[in-house]
Length: 222
Image (cartoon, rainbow, N blue to C red; front, side, top):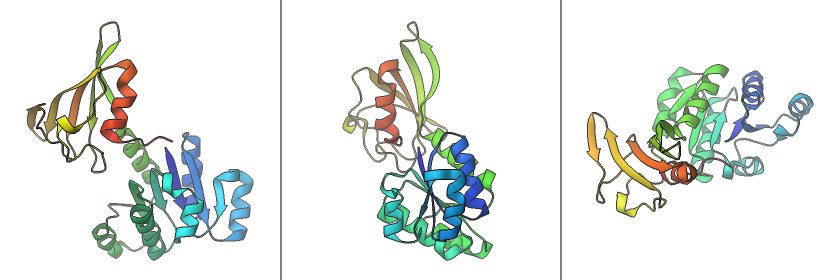
């Protein structure tokens, strides 16, 4: 899981430090040269000198392969630009922005930045929740642990959303059994179309679980 953090102030510093400690790959972007030099003494190559509100700066940060972009500068406009570029130009699946003025929250949401938070811990927890939704959850194992009953919640950016089951190239040793949609239980058939927020229940061999995860949720790991 790769995270690009824009803004090297106190919030960006502690957030980057927290995510690195949790095992994430992180790049912190800031355009204050003296601040970058100071942060680099502790965070090393995880810090780069660039503008996080420019295409060039985000490209240098590797935004094209990022799973999450977090903009935490003290300027709401810069945060909005960084998140917009991340989502629309680099196709980053998840954008999280710090908002200093609560009145701007509606604008952020209207422009597709659905997660707006202000605290370091809250942002780290939001990223971890997003990561968790990109994984399969094992409900039951059987056949000497060779087979597993698993579930996955489909996000809006899941590659199978909008497709019927017959259009999905499932691994040979995997089968989708049920789909939970709200309070409705749907028995999986070839013409069943998947939607965001569906909970997919599948049976898979242990060897094919990672392939199944990538097919249902996307290849979020680099």
